[in-house]
Length: 279
Image 1 (cartoon, rainbow, N blue to C red):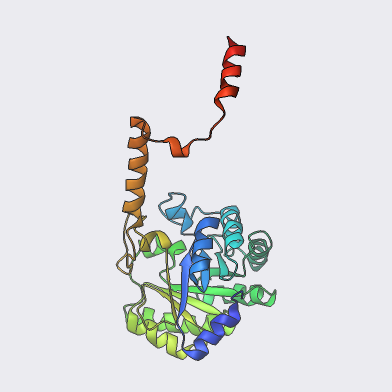
Image 2 (cartoon, rainbow, N blue to C red):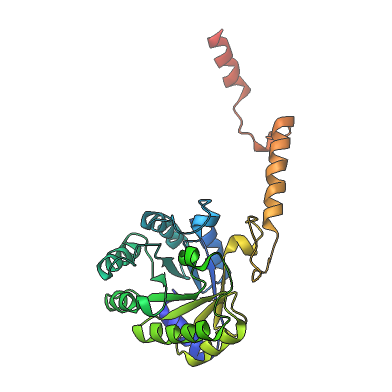
């Protein structure tokens, strides 16, 4: 059965942990879906792990639609959430509605995700009122990396911790159905999870959140440019892939591949006739 925001609501009520992973293509989404993940985020992290950008700022709405639609075709049961990229919602409520609508109509999203607290509540309210579920994102918000001065743990002092709490309450009141908490102290994230009625999804926010999300290239050892402290590598797929690529190159160059079992056949009689005609 297709998972929806009701799945998130029930999980929070029943104290059941939610699972999310990022995906950016059909094949990966299909595997995740078959594994039973609750939701798949088509994150603007594709700027880093797919497109090779230094950050997420250069990602476009068209990028998100292209990858989102591919993921949606592979996710039969998991809820598909698509990130609203940088400057697709900050300029005006009108722009936010148009772009969120495109992510649903063309990208086949079940929900959209956007970054920010009290300053984006008007957008959350408008998009939600238009019938599009919104997942919020607080703490380390990668689209604001230039303001933060890098990817750093957030809200460690009293003032910023208080603002995070206020922002979390505000986005819930604005209509967000869930909120991602990224790179915030575990005790603070746990406290916020207790006071909100909507589920919190942690990434570098400890075990007290209502669910967790990871970038799949991080958890599989496929992205080596940097490794955040909060990442657990569940498998070293990157090393396996590198060995397979190396084996393919070596076997092709040495003539081992393709072998007889990889070839298609044609009768010797037909080949003899063809050779005689050519001669």
